[in-house]
Image 1 (tube, one colour):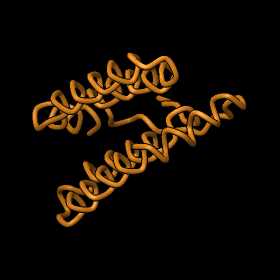
Image 2: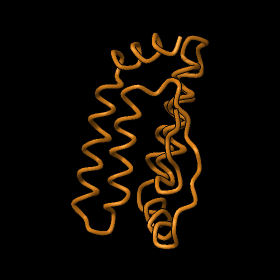
Image 3: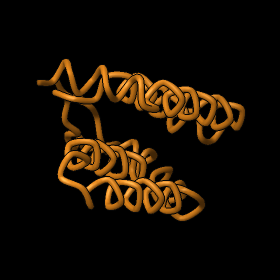
Length: 121
């Protein structure tokens, strides 16, 4: 079932979402301060290509990374997370879309505080 979900995800927009997160990571890496966040967005771009079967796990970031997380959350992370949550809710309206909505909820959790999360198989 995971493989079927991943193939459908990739065909129905996962590839374009991955490109979008990759470009966001590039833009964040242009700034010196947000290079760690940009590297996390590269991980997110890879996750978006094949999300089924993976989960977001919390990690304990260092003090500097906690400060960067808060700055990121205030200046844009909350907007990205809110958009992903809304898309997830829209997908959950139909029974067929619930697995896809769950993937958007995982992404929203990651985007809000990217330096405090990581992906596990």
